[in-house]
Image 1: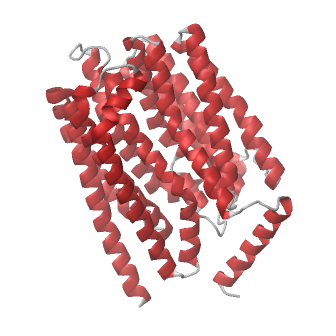
Image 2 (image 1 turned 120 degrees about the horizontal axis):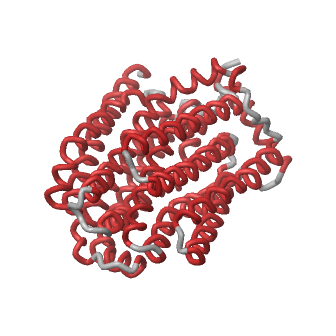
Image 3 (image 1 turned 90 degrees about the vertical axis):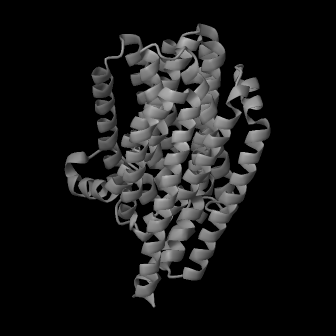
Length: 441
């Protein structure tokens, strides 16, 4: 029996099982609709939490929240380890869910230990250190939840992943907002959001996994070391890529924090830059609205339906490019005005930096499309060149630009870094794809 035929039969069995559970399960429409709701909600959470911090806290605490959330996102990449892309495209189930789950436990432990080491090394005061570690813990719980969402997507149930994201995001938003409103304490609100996120893991992830798939996921790390190391080894290039690009995202914020602590900037600059940068961050997350397409792309590739595969890629690039142009135009016309109105701060003077940031964000999204395609090719390790090159450029120029021109300098350094990232990623994709086509012909 051919591998393709074997896979198709296996896929049919899965689809029948899901159908028996619920007649509407696995439908393309449900997958897209709930994935859209979930991704948009997940994208909005960072926006709204910063909004609450800006509205309910003074500029000093707003700055602390801004850098703490950015660092939480940085360490989240270590807990996430970019395994989701690998897991969701593992349609032949090379590794079991238990192995993916055990691996995620290991990466989350690394995430927490590394973050503790970081705050000690940086010499932050106790208050700032605790806030950072609490938000790292909050994101660690998100990273744990993600392994379940990856499993749902792998089983062609992106709708379930979307529902988890949707309910988790809005409950956390509401609870954090009310906590800040009532207590005006960033410390108390950070503790509360961690506890709520932990409870939601049991109520949502565990319950849905058991109810829909009868999933077993109790840790058995010592008995699964071979698979864990194998997954970590395969995902390592993706992790390096994700960690580096997130660091590039956060480089200006870290430099602003350093210069702020030295008294070279006034309170509020970190908050202002994070507000301006927020739509850029959301752009990168909104790419995952199209996440169900990645599983479909994998199916086309493994079934050797190359014409459909490349047509889907073309649609992705075209859609992202058109949306990008529209977003940049709207950003210039009304972007800073709307952000200033929503967050209660004046941002009119940052109109040009905002457009520069949006342009860099669009280039990053286009590079993310290439990243997904290279993962399906299982040639993601080649992209390490693009990520490392971008990282080096960002490290060389960001502090210089920020120190000289503040937010404008931070914006320019980001655009230059993303331009390098997109161009190098595209060149690598073209070389790998052309070589693969020659082998098939």
